[in-house]
Image 1 (spheres, rainbow, N blue to C red):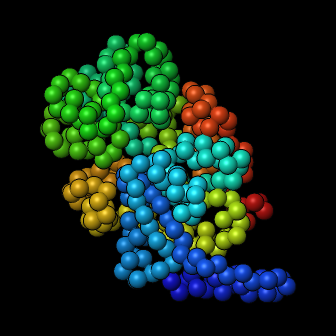
Image 2: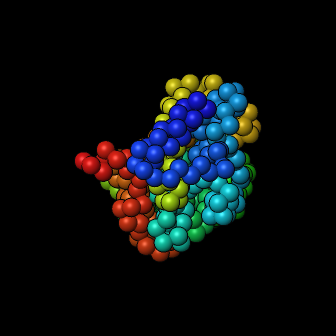
Length: 327
């Protein structure tokens, strides 16, 4: 990868010279990539591992536990490319007056309904029930509300008790075998491993797909528009590496699980191996990315406009390669 980056920089310099321009070489040679410890980083671990093994200094990677910390470092210029929650990308786009572009989708839906109650198999079965979830005022709440509405169930017909941490929902499920929880991966897998009576009875991504409103999107990768315009070869190289890394995770689950555990994303490799296929780690870019993400953000906007920063992003929010723009 290091040689490839050198070639890319050299190509950019040559192009500038041929155009009669002045070549400016930045003192910052590294591309600084940030992500959160969770499913959105699972597809990145092979990329990270290869860079470390090759002693590749073209990229540096940092994982954090809170979205606020990640976005703070990104907005202050400490990170160049970051993997963030999908709605956070829209919020940042609005805050920066359009200086944000989504370059890929890295993770689709990761929410599952977990319970030992055999009478529950879909969102349609939740009428009159109590559900435990995280994410009050965040994406899980909007997703659940939308799916209830799509199944003809009003919010008043379901009691939702929100917990501050997914581990609290797992604890509630362990104490009450009739409890119903909405959990993201890998917590859904952890809950079922800890209590053999529990089952993942419903994949909320599949429930969302039935509505015809795009698809459920968890994580996207973003960069500032001015950074992208100044470093197009870097962006294309990153996307190539990211796509390959995500494909590796899908095709080499056991090996990827070891890397996920080593990175501290999931404590134990067997849990990571069981959870990874359910984490919907996917690579989407271009028009496919735009279709999936725009439909998802529209649903969130209709639930609460502030969940996407007050308004839906314009077309310039979605990064397109030159050949796609020509088409």
